[in-house]
Amino acid sequence: MIAKLLSWIQVFNNETMLKKLKILWLCLFVPGVIGLLIKVISGERLAGYGSYVPWGIWIAVYFHAVGISGGAFAVGVIGYLKGIKGLRENLNTTLLVSACSLITGLLAIWLDLGRPFRAYRVGISPNFGSMLAFNAWMYSIFLVLVGIMLFLSVKRRQANVVNDKTGWLVPLLLLGLLLSIAYPSQSGAFFGVVDAKPFWSSAILPVLFLTSAITSGASALLLVYYYLRGESAAIDTPEQGPYPYLRKIILAGIAVYFMGEFSEYSLALWSPISHLKETIYLILFGKFWWVFWLIHVGGAIIGFYLIFNAQSVTKLAIGAFIIVTTFISTRLNILIPGQSIPELKGLNEAFTHARLNFNYSPTMVEYLITLFVIAFGLALFYFSHKILSTYIEKEN
Image 1 (cartoon, rainbow, N blue to C red):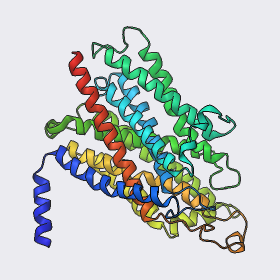
Image 2: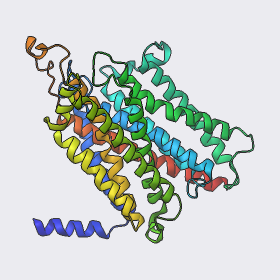
Image 3: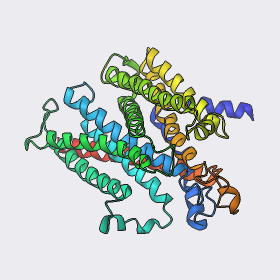
Image 4: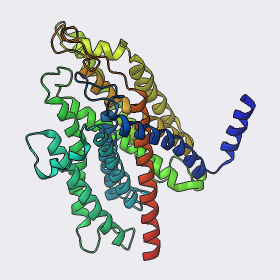
């Protein structure tokens, strides 16, 4: 059995990078489709969330994907306007990464809706007093803008010219830049206005969400650039192309995020009357302590070390991969613990039911559908990029 497993690993190692990625993608897609079919048949009966903890892992995936979208756009467009090599020539790719991440996030939250086919109502009868409606409209406007910018970018004949012939590309990029900074921050504000949850009602949350978005978005861009280089990546060095620019942003993003998080936690733990202590103890020493210490802190330390000391772009890409995947813990550590402390003492004992539980754990179906959402996002980018590349080749 072990010999067979080793032979499979040997065969896998001998494949090209694209084929390896396709195999890994199938490992996400196949179980993901099974999970999706189970959800279609069983509805929400097999999900772990309930009335007290209504937002589970799919919502964390949604916030993370939306953050990657905003962060990738902001970092990529600023790099484009600054003339960073690799980003100046690949504006189309930056736009695709941003749009595909946002659509992936919207799929995650759509699957979480109890009645997903009523989602259109936020478009035809929105209540702009609700931040959810506000966000939904902001996403829609951003996607339309990205579509227009993509069209203008493709029609831009000379790669070294910043603006297009109509003169609209740069103004639209600046407007998109504003939105891409606004909606990850808005995600933090969405939690900050919930006064009933003391852990969420914090002015630092929009800053933490934006910092996480920029760090994850820069990591995603670095990974995509590494992937697009293909076999040529083997001869690249970390001092070439967009790597130095993205590297600095990722390292600074990790440092700023942890400083913000430390200031929030340390102040709450120092204060003798803070209402946040119980939630922070839950994060640090509760059932899911490993999400904070192993995935969040451990992932950030390893990713930071690899990116800081990388002598090859492969190590740089591995570090970026660790950051973009483990930074979902920044969402989980805010989302789940914030719902897991009863607002009223004794509430968890006053009523008993399987859905009246503060101890949320994702079920197997939730994990499988999470794999499906990730596989969907990767496939969406792959085919979008392939179609766009084919179109540009024909035009030229």
